[in-house]
Length: 131
Image 1: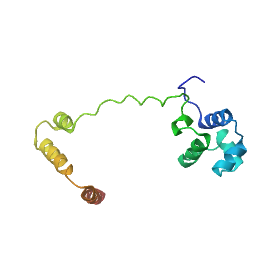
Image 2: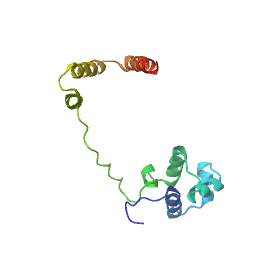
Image 3: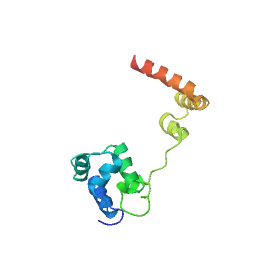
Image 4: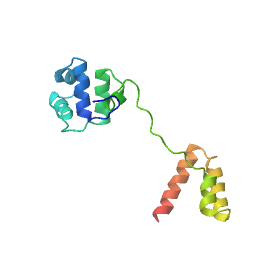
């Protein structure tokens, strides 16, 4: 397996466990998971929950990302395209008409709400949308 190449989580957990000189019983003892569960995870018969993966990472003494990635450094973040601003989107879709002005004004007002007021507003919007 090359550096940075993805692999199955069970295979990776077994690899890390063996690198640490641990047996499945050691994992069982330190995580509280039965060794049969450890075996099922390592053999790809069961997908572990995030909580279980966090326990594995702690016991193996590695950061969580290393359970998914071979390499010493964290994987590079995906290259994302920049998002267009609301002004660009409204200009592209509505020109400079009343709908564009309304959306921009609404955006401005929403940005001034407290988190509690925003939750109330979104709850009201959900109720209206459900009707």
